[in-house]
Image (cartoon, rainbow, N blue to C red):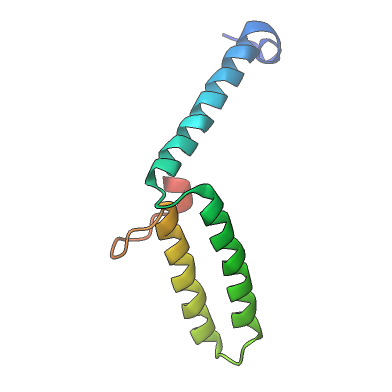
Length: 96
């Protein structure tokens, strides 16, 4: 059995850090492979989306209409990121 003290010093800590980093890197690689554009363009799209949401919030739309506008635009961004497929059931973020 490994003691909690040994987890934070020496080789065990190095192994844990390397394993954690590899797992994190793998998640990003998989996610970027699914993306439909590059990161610079996606950043610009997200900034424009924030402005769009602000305009929806300040408009005279009824609450349900505003929710629909927001949901559809968020789904479009998720589709660009490779995190959404039209017609499929919603996958909770913590279940991926």
